[in-house]
Length: 524
Image (tube, rainbow, N blue to C red):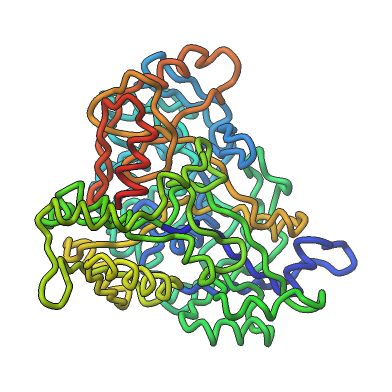
């Protein structure tokens, strides 16, 4: 429903670090960032939450990285790779000399153990299960050579190796229980090391001495210049804002609209930085196990009753009502405003045809929207409820604490949820530790996507984000290693969507892009 933006607010010290760090002023010894959402699990193999992954990315490296400007997959822990014609066999050659912070070598056996771990977690790794769909086996054919095989073509796997979910953890960490790992018993190969973990309070990391294997995209190679990185969980927006202004925090990662006017007007103090995250924008997602929502006409009526233009006054700087299911920084984005236009007369006709007539109170049907009370879009959800009420749909907007919200969504105890799907990236945090210009701190990562379903359409599938879509592989291997794979992947089989996301993509349409826009963006 909304275009999700990444809001980063750097304090004066961070602006100096990002923009003008020199030998004279030096790096900030400690960087403190305020998170709006509690940290419930730090294990990147398990957690799907962006806030958790933002922390995990600081101590976990990946086999590959992705260029945020071109979408190209580039070397990181893997210095090269090859992909067979069917995209069922991937062979990686690892960098030499990489170690985990506990001293264990990051060799082929460690990579195999990590992939097997994500696969074995199953439902505990909702993102990993999607990335490794069709996973058969990984083998170490040498100390630095890993071969990964899939039972069916895996268009998404190469790009998935750039994600923190498939990042590398020490074999000793993998031997711990999933619960201990969530609580912070974790060791990675990244530039920071977990120092102190108090879930839902604070996570403290320290720079790793001797770190020397950053991604090819990194502008700084070696030990991070920020010595201590602290993520403080401050769920109260007023307290978070006050801490930023007073200097207790250097960054606020979720600034509310009412606080924006206080930043950057006179060139002094903190500044507000915005950047559009790639992926799927905030979208109203139905629980199609509910009788009324099984009917596509009812879902379409919900979409037609919403006037997204009216959301604009409630949005923050850098945000605007959605014009596509994809963010504008995602390859495949197109302006589909016409498909998202409001038509309440048509919505009423569809509801009548579905047999949902107004009762004595004017209500045709009631739905419940559950969401975390820490979300910033409560006012938008209330406006949506008012708009839907005009066609006889009652939307009960229900803010919940994070634990209850997670439990209800996992149990399917809802009619609607609202999600956006993006990727956690260390780009901003690495930028601050590397003294890049502050305008680059919020640089978005670009990705490529391909829809999933059970059948292949005749036309080439469109690109999209997570959930019921699989990433589309770009030609990014060294020259000559996968020259024929790209065209093959454009015809690759669509796969089912992620468990519990509630989206259904109908394959075999003459125009898959338009069909998906209708079935997901407009109808839901």
